[in-house]
Amino acid sequence: MKFMSRPKPIGFSKEKASRVLGEKAVDVLIASSPENVFYTCGLPVRAAENNPILFALSNQYPTIVAVYKDGSESMVTWALYNATLSWIEEVQGILTPEHAMDTIIPLIKKHGFERGVIGIEPLMPYYQYEKLRKAFPDAKFRVSDDLFMDMRISKSKEEIKRIKESTRIAEKAIEVMVENVAEGVSDFDFLKIAKSIVIEEGAAGVDHVTLAIGNSDPEAPGTGVKMKPGDITRFDIGAIYRGYNSDVSRHAFLGEVPSGIQEAFDAAVEVQKACVDAIKSGADPKEVSKAAQDAWQAQGRKDPVFITLHSIGLQTEEFHWLDPMRGVSPRKFVENAVVDIEAWSLHSNVGLVGNEDTYVITSSGCERISQLDMKIFIV
Image (tube, rainbow, N blue to C red; front, side, top):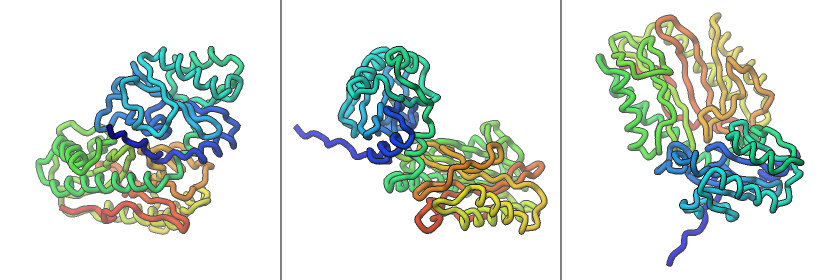
């Protein structure tokens, strides 16, 4: 009988985990959300998988991972699932939520952390926290989203490879949508195109389809609005490829683009370029924000520009270095992080006009992942 070898970690690193937990003085870190469980064990626990059964049944058979300060791990998961699909060797099967907690608690005790510092997620189900708190009355509990982000923000070669493919798929969907821009085409038509192309190109599913025709609401497409001459579209697509997301946006115009719209778009592209020039490992987001605003004003713009710089990985917007609502983060840019750069201006009867592309931070600066021309597509 032939046995499959266990897979290698995708982005998780025992050495990185040990360093991060040591720096923050956390003894054991508990992963309970789909993103962090996937990151720490590799099992297909997310909503978009070849078979998302572990996600669908997570209320009955939760997968929980404990990461210890030496980088080793324990996991509990559904007893009927093939746990050898994970690289974790210390695994026990469970059959109920209560069984999951009654199983993970002895594993933590086995590693000697009854009185240690236990890091948890803010999204951890309350029943899990309650069981842990009662089982470890002498332990200190700490909400530890920052630890997971410290581990996840700098991507491995495999993670970057998957994000690049996810981006290619999203851009292919945009290209096909642009090819289908015509009078009478509805947002329902574009939704079908986007979702079908994403699957046909090899992704497990769609992360988001932000779609507008004219002044329709891009966050809530599917109202039946149809294109007419003089309409601008916004196609903002995210695919999910082997767990990893993408985020790309482009406009297409049915007719001649008004000069005001074209000028705003061109200025947004200049903001993107300024961000690319300023972003490098160790750069302060405040410096990048200033460079972006300077580039906008250098185009003679008096209106506000809305700039967002966010990390992409297991989530489309897993971390924000800069955005109009949250301001500027103190966390500096790091090598091998994947950053999405978007710049927008607001126009009456049109909405947001701008551009969005994805880059990976290298030792020398920024490498563009996106391949689409930085332009408004004219049909």
